Length: 356
Image 1 (tube, rainbow, N blue to C red):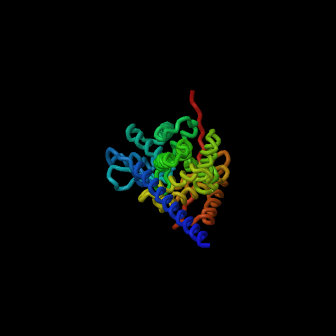
Image 2: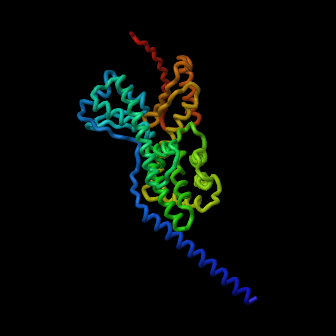
Image 3: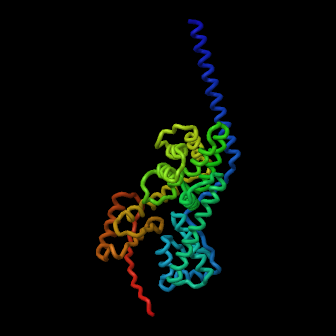
């Protein structure tokens, strides 16, 4: 009995020592990884500011009876705030890509000097094409920084879109690269596959670049994309498990969970209220875009107004009135919001003929 008692005490002591050592090593591992990844954080906002050469430009941007500013807001889906701020126009939108296209469009118009609806449309489509190229380059730069070559060009493009996305105020592409470095360092220290850990980390938030038309959680969408474009089962599993929707079965999956949590929980990295605001505006747009015949929907004025563009061939004038009532009722039933939400349905038809 005495020997058994001594044995049990020794086993318990060894177990406690092993657990203590494991905790100490884990803390050291995380501390070492954090020190080696010195990332700066700037809180992303939902506004961009365009500087003007003079305050006279404000009148030209607004246009006669507001036709220019209406054309800008209609095309871009962004709020153009022209107030008494000296020599500046503020652009407000929860969607970073829309905001960037609007900013580029306005800057081109100011430089060109000709501001009228036809020129606005021309500059808008030119800026849109230019931004697609910026997105591709941002994706390629991220792949280069992560040292993860041989990615499909579609994946690279989606990765570039993360530069214009935020999660709780944290830029998603910066967060992704931070997670890549953290996961790589920890995998190297533990003797796990550095390649698998880094590739999974690079692709783990791809789903956040998708619009609300793609259903499912961002972790599972990211895993589907990784699988579709030929990533290994180890990479796919780590991605789908990083929010515990699938039970993690590998060391790399557990490391991705840890690296993701470390990056997100750094002081000042994230802000809760901004994310709630963005989700509310996204939900507003989603209600409208699910309706048949709707081409685009933009939530404006901080969610106090939603503009819905319909296909003129599918929705006639009477149906447009009914559609606005339907959307308003659904917003009342499904969402919580302060004040009122104005629903504006726009049906625009164009007749074009060429004189020869």
